[in-house]
Image (cartoon, rainbow, N blue to C red; front, side, top):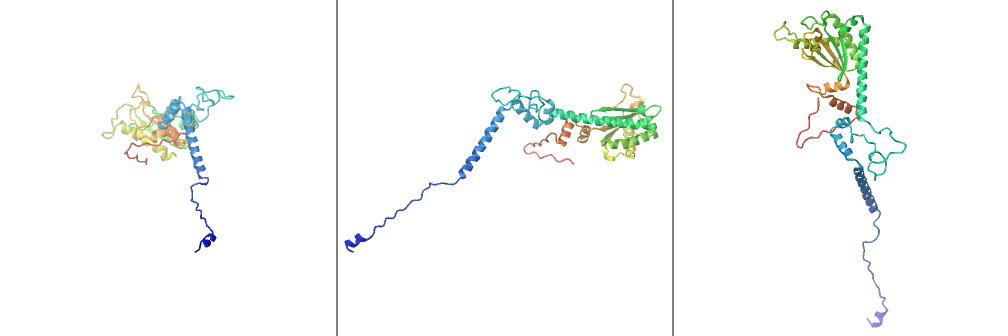
Length: 329
């Protein structure tokens, strides 16, 4: 190939563009950044809330979830007595005691007052028991045969509900001497009470009592304990015959002379009596949720409010390695 031919051929220059890592990557980074900013805002908001809450309120919140009713009944800081994060109300966090809201001085507290809720439950149950007492009095007054027992009838309101007692009288006993055989006038009274007590919707505790005079007749080993229990059970049968549903009877007790009506005179005929305790809602909780011994009134009230949804039910905490408690049957 001659030199002239080489000069006529075109010269081709090939440029290779190397791939780089520049350019746009879309908007995914913006979403991740927005999530990060949102999380940081929530974190600092939580820190602000914790920092602006009084120490007493923090302790009260912690104690509330351990024992709700104890905190609310005890009152004080931390028991829900504050409607603002700043003591005294207001929006200025630089002030230690807060400031008074305009137009809302001495205004009503917001939220539910547990103390007021407790009083409301107690007042409602007391009114219901008073109504039951009036029903019994009206029934006795309207029936001439029952009116003869008026002097032997004792009624009073106690913590567990309405207590109706029929005491013995020397000239008008309720049972045959040394026996659980019910007299006719007592039978009529009990059957009338059976229909009446069923209308209240309450459960009852029935107990029989004797005086302190030792039981001398009958079978060997038969004492005032057996006699009081038999009389209570005989009274239960008459109440059921009068219309009281069987599931309304919670307990039947024979008390002998362990709880005297007249402690100054153990042999007083009035110590021989039948007691019918018409339970309030709190009384039902005390007697139903307990084993052999009724639980306290505070525990019963707490369980009642939990059933009504007024306070949260605490989650049981088990020790490490401990088996959870078996459910109630």
